[in-house]
Length: 203
Image (cartoon, rainbow, N blue to C red; front, side):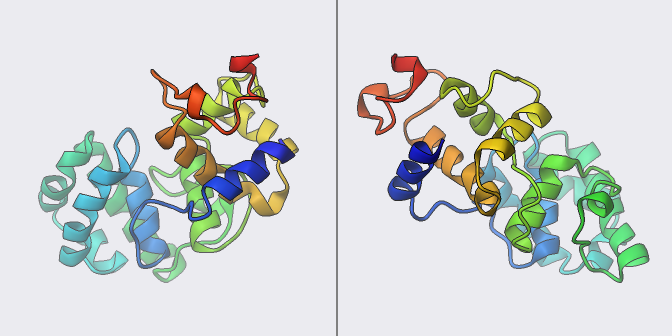
């Protein structure tokens, strides 16, 4: 993994969270909306959402129909609208409108699982508590022989054992960048890949 990590860092020096946000609350809401939706679509929806509702208080007290209308393009909009509205209200009621900084507190919020919590902890607070495992990260981890697991939590545990803790947040961004640039699901560009010599797919 160390060789691959160095190569990924060299080739994707600007790898970062693709969800546009100005603060931890916006990142939390954007991440919740990103479930089964592209980051590009979320980034089109959130400016409208955050212009209409600028704070957790505003979103928590918003009419559900108005929230549904805005977030509809992200899919599963009824569930997502209820989740982001309730979570925003819970932040007001339980945390003085601040996003908590622990995994335990985050996953108690409606619609927030370990993946979303890891995104927020790593990117909003620079807390490397775990590894975000999305479809890109899972696929690349298996292709490159870093795990044989399909369950995201088990993939995460394997990666946490291979990657230095200070890189737990970054490794996800690196894998996502590589997955989008070269190592796609259907047609990976193996001939162009700088990792091809060590990738099990080419051995």
